[in-house]
Every structure is written in structure tokens, then in C-alpha cells.
Amino acid sequence: MTITRRQAGETPRKTEFPDMVETPTRRSRPRKSTAAASPEDSKTENSDASPNTVAKKSTKENGAATSTRKAVGRPRKESKDPKIDHTGEFEFGGSCGVSAMMLGFPLLMYYMWLGATYFDGKLPSKEKGESNIHFILVLCDLVYGGAFPTPKAWIMYWGFLLFQAACYLYLPGITAYGKPLEHEGGKRLEYYCSGVWSFYATITAAALLHVTGLFKLYTIIDEFGPLMSVAIISGFAVSIVAYVSALYRVAEHRMTGYHVYDFFMGAELNPRMFGLLDFKMFFEVRLPWYMLFLISLGTAVRQYEHFGYVTGEVGFLLMAHFLYANACSKAEESIVTTWDMYYEKWGFMLIFWNLAGVPLSYCHCTIYLANHAPSVYHWNPIALGALYVSYLFVYWVWDTANAQKNRFRQQERGTVFNRKTFPQLPWQDVQNPKTIQTKSGDSLFSRWLVRIRAEDPLHVRSLFCFDVGAHYRLQQPFPLVLRCFLHAHDSASSLEGCATLPSQVW
Image 1 (tube, rainbow, N blue to C red):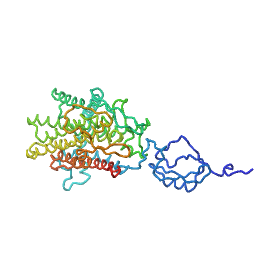
Image 2 (cartoon, one colour):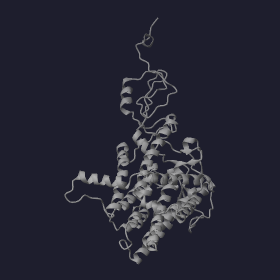
Image 3 (spheres, helix red, strand yellow):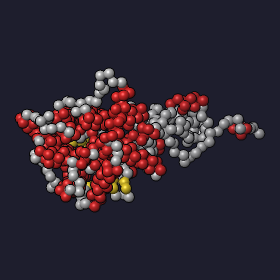
Image 4 (cartoon, rainbow, N blue to C red):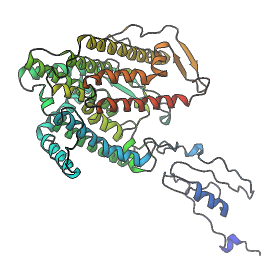
């Protein structure tokens, strides 16, 4: 009887795990066939595999030596696990880039605050003959003395967050549905939208606290340094809890296998507290913009108590921040289908910037006005009036373009909301809209206001940045530069995403 090599044990056989799901960091994957791998395949497997791409290997089925190798980087359909990121793309320079951002942004926030508070709105710089070490020690001492996270700041900050959470859950609102989630079989998440009532309840509560003397609104300005430190610490703490919680509950989504990068971009897609409070919706709509508005309101109140009037410059910022916070609230149901809600994950980038970065860095134009006498920053009335008009025009374009876009989405899905929230601007509804059909079956809306915003979003957003940052007169350029940088990145990402459409559609 002839004994084969396999029976003699001379041919090695690879152990199979039929139910095993490959993780991003594995360099090998089980095969469907039971045939042995050739040396050439082993070399290719070791050289081509990566955390984000999976190569199809040649196999021998039923003794046939037919190669079925396909392009590297195209995973098989059965390996499209939604928990794994198959794109192979890294934003912000990958792990090194996001590490620099996580360390650099808090330091930049402190540097901006030092300039606005102790250096007359200018860039902090060392004196002539002063050593670098001594200069750094001086800055650290100023931060410790003026921005130490006091118990009062903790109570103020987290008291505000808990109040907003209660408003989110218990005030009147409407129900809206997000975009179909492909990895959930087309499921559409339900969102409770109570932003309008939350915003005006916040204003009412703030007014009552100020009038009764329980909490003067300008305390926010007086405690700005400690509040900023509390916000920065909270941003890191919440990000860590969110990441660890997602891993513990096996709720991760589109993971790359690089923990630093995944921590920054996020692990979980749609985190909710007890199935009721959607964290992304809660953080993006309410927290940053309401805080930003309250900082401007506190500045206006203190100015009125000191001088008996509110300057046009402070009034401009109060108007701008009110309109933006109000816009996020009045059309909250339109946000549920945006990129942030259905694609962006719950990570450091979203958490930190909504808890600390946006409200406590976008407000430095307000802090500058709060720390200086009106005579220092007084504008020519004609120039200031032109600034008001330009901002209101740009706001109208931005608000109406978004309204047209979202009304079109709602009409397609049969979920049109005719709300009477303030303000309802003209040209929000489009009759018989012109559309562009894509191969995927989606319809793209084409209208002149949408084109203004979609084809040249950087210009519109730059006008926003300039109008709000102009009060600095470029004495401290960070707020203007930071806003332009962030909006430029956002616009570039939008244009990059649109450029992936077929050329005839784009």
C-alpha cells in the first residue's frame, strides 16, 4: 500500500479556525481551502498584509492549481466587518499627527488665553534679555495662578452640562430620523429634538439667576481661566471613558488597530445614554454654542452695569453668537442626517472640541472686548454698520442654503417639518427642484444658494471668520487664524468628498 506524504506527516497542514474574524492587527488570515500554502503565497502574505488591507491569496481547490489572486487592498465581501476600517486612509497625519494635535491644542488654548489676559491681547513673548526657561516658568506660574481648576469652576461647568442634559430629555420637542445606516441593514435612528426649548430655557434661567443675584452672568468672564482648565480636563476624561467603554462593550466601529489614532477619531458611532440621550447630538448642538453665547451675554451684562450701555462691538458679537446658537436649535431636526451624525465617530476630536476647543477658543474676540475699555476698540460707526450688514447677509446665505438642502432631503423621505421657529427666512422652500441622479440611486440637489455654499464654502466661512475676528484689529491673530484653519479643513474635506463622485456629476 502506497503511503502519501500527507499520511506520513511530511506535508505540514495549517490549523483552521472557520469562525475566526480577523482583527486589524493580524498579519495572516485563515483560508477556505484545506490545501497547503505555497512558499510564494507565504512570501506574498507577509509582504502585502497590513492592518487596513487584506489581500486575496491564491488557493488550490480540488487539487487544481488555478490562481484566484485579486488586487491587493480589495477585501472580500464576507470580510466587510463594520468594526474594521477597510479604507486604509488616515486623516491629520495618522497617529503622529493626532498625537501632536492632542498635546498642542490645549497648550495653544492656554497660550491664547495668556495673550488675551496678561499681554494686552498680543502674542505672549519674552522680554529682552530674558531666557527661554525663565519665560516658560513665568507662563506656567500665570496659568497656575489664573487658570487653576477650582471647585467653583467644576460646579459651574458640570452644573451647566447637567442642566442641558435635563433640558434635552424633558423639554418639548419633535422626533426626527437619521440617514439609513448600511451596517445596520438600513436602520434609521430616532432622534429627539428639543433644542429650541432648551436654548430659550437656558436664556430664561440665566436671566433669572442674574436678576436674583444667585449667579451674575459676568462670573463666566471672571472665572474664564479656571473654567477653561476644567473644560480641557473634562475633554480628556470624557474621551478616555468613551473609548474604554466602547471597547469594553464591544461597540467599536471602523477601527484601524492603531489605538492613538482610533482614540482621536473615536471608537463608537452612535453612543447613547440609556437609549435616550444621543451624545453626539447633545454635544454638537447645545454645549459649545450655548456656552459661546453665554460668554458674550456675560460680557454685555457687565458692560451695561459698568457703563450704562452696551457698545456696538459687543452687540455685534452677541448678535452673531445668538444667531448661530439659535440656528443650531431651530433646525435641529436637519442635523440628524448630516455627516457628523451618521459617519463621524464619538472620539477625542468631537468630544474635546465641543467641550473645550470651540466654546473657549472661539470666544477670544469677546474676551478681548471684556478686558478693554470701549475707547480702545471703538470702531467708526459706518464701518461697524457695514460689518453688521455683511454678517447678516452671509448668515442669510448660510441659513437659507442649508434650509434648501435639508428641505430637499425631507421631501425625498416624506418627513417634511413645517416648524414656526424663529427666524424663518425667505427662499427656504424650492418648488420643482432640479436634481442630479447618481449611479447609486441618490439624488443631488442643484440650486443657486446651495451652489454658493457647496462650490465655494471657504469664501462664505471666511467671511464669518473675518466679521467676528475683525474686532481684534489683528492684535492677537490666533482666533482669526484658528477659525480660518478649521473652516478651511472642513471645506477641503467637503470638496474632497464631493470629488469622489463621478466626473459628470461633480
